[in-house]
Image (cartoon, rainbow, N blue to C red; front, side, top):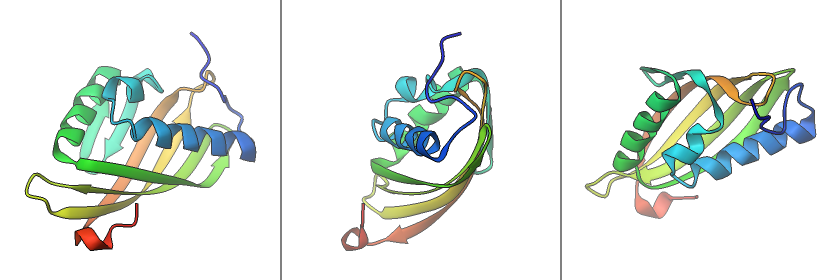
Length: 136
């Protein structure tokens, strides 16, 4: 399997690079591109949904971005050790009626030895906001 740099064990520099790469990929809103960062058998918990495998990730992200219009994401590294990271994030989006939301959350990531994300556990809360309150 090809390596997806940076690979674990992470340093501060490489952990920050990995978080920025994830932010950049998710902001493309391209499910196929985003899914390439995960192992074929990746395991996710996103809110109350459990997702297993790259193909299911693509389907999930396709549904997500069909609902979450105007999506813009910011991620921040909170901590790391060996092949694991904790990341804080927020993103803004609006639904089909035009109601804006800011979604806040935390993710726990685990990577395989080739730098692909094997596990992603996300806890997320949504806050309705006025368009004028947007910050991203």
